[in-house]
Length: 341
Image (cartoon, rainbow, N blue to C red):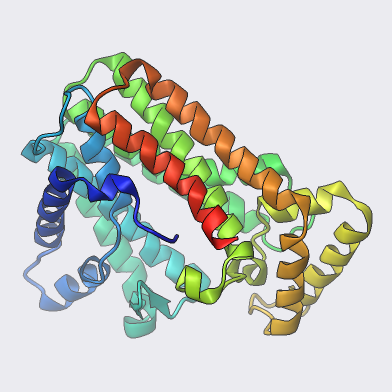
């Protein structure tokens, strides 16, 4: 997504994210140089560290001005990011991806088996750190890993499914994306010892942001260029992942829906294989049709609804630097579609 979230510009948060970076690398250091290299591959490739940022900021929502996080909060942020990274290793195997964050994907460089095992290793390290923070954090992170799997399985079940429902789509992204962002906020609140109502409000905000985040990401796959995305646009259509603008366009019926369904059928494998169909002309025609559909604006409105729900949850705690930063991050998210569209 384009631009830098205002959340990530906070000086105190920047310093604490550097602590997260150091702890991430330390957490995957082993006696085996090869395993260390593979496990650290995407850590050293960089990233915005949105989930650790949410954990760190959530922990500071009860004080007027953010101060440096306690070590336990930093480690909570590390555990969440390790889960995210482990899921990326597995995602790249499923997608047969060749690059991730401008570097070779782990599966492309070392093979699928190594990527799967390295992803498992990152999840294990995340669980180990969570256990050191208490049984509640450990149980929460374990449950979240399960939700990630459930969401991804739901998505796989509906690959190339022209009848995929909006409910199925929302259930999937609630698991594969929103659950971890909600958990990031919740862990920050738990480890910081915040009151239970505030922890619940932060969890609602994180989950709502996660829903909006995935909807916006899916919209950008339709509306943005390769250059704006930093990766090939239209990937979801090629992989048969029919997201909200597709689902709503098809559900509306009429000529546009029929034309889109025809284009999507041409992109779908017909020989029982799972290999994507290489048809750039059809892909671009489908993207152009979707960009002209009312479903784009409708989908953005759905994302806005989730953002507003998250902001409403935080309203009782408004006025602190951390809460203001979280609210600004949510507004910035919606602006990325307007900038690219």
